Amino acid sequence: DACDCTGQSGSQSCDGGAAADQSSAADTTAADAGTEQTPAERLAGLWHVVKWELTMPDGTVVKPFGDTPTGSIYFLAADARFWGILNHSTDAPDFADGSSPFKGTPEESKAAHDAYIGYAGTYTIQEADSTVTLHVLNAWTPNWLGTDQVRKFTFTDNGQMILAPTNFEGNQLVFEKK
Image (cartoon, rainbow, N blue to C red):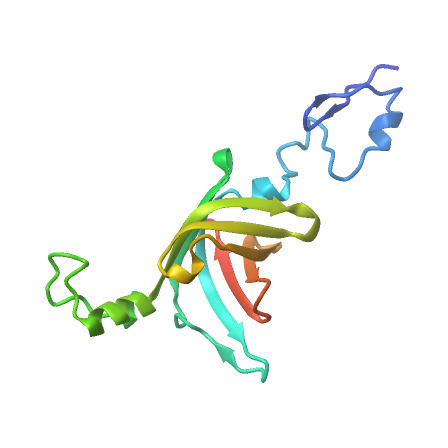
């Protein structure tokens, strides 16, 4: 009996199809290789935030950047780099002197800082516990420089991704690829 057994990383031998029958759910045949992706493959790409909610211990739901947060997180798989930006621009007024981002009044600068989150660095994925560790190299706030920010990731059936910091129960951001 001839068989054509291929896995994600190339050909594998089989004995009349028995090996194919015993393959794990993670293995794919040539026919369905395009439908099964690893968590790392699913995570890679540009994601746009659609919701950010904090559920407080008393059950109160807080939306730090309102009902329509803007922003993105980009996971570049080729060299495991990421950047993330969140912004609620309607909360921050334009600087009166718009010639430079460094010429805001103290009030304007504080409002801009409070309406923005930005950071970048490298990342590692821990597939076993569905977490991604963001190794922060650049950040809008000095407290995050050089830190590791761990996020639990979940992929929904409707194509969304939920990122939830592991150090703050009830904090979750919902993203979509567009």
